[in-house]
Image (cartoon, rainbow, N blue to C red; front, side):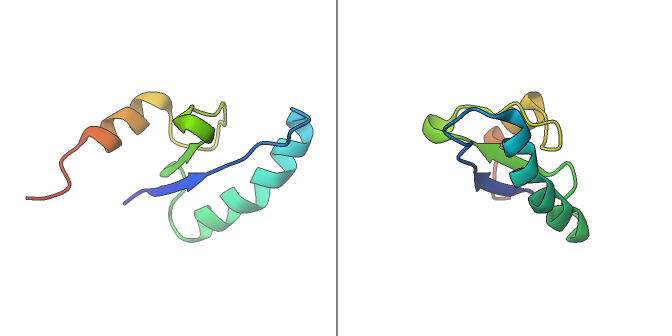
Length: 69
């Protein structure tokens, strides 16, 4: 199971502010057993440089895998 979530980074591009926004979100995902299984995307599906989310290759693999038996 993975969690797919859109994230809109701060318009200022401030990485400290971005980290402050994401920290409580990732803590919540961890409590639900979704640590490392959170797929974040930005506008236009661009990948985000977030270390607590699933890695790029993992995202590609999950999104391309069949959903049905």
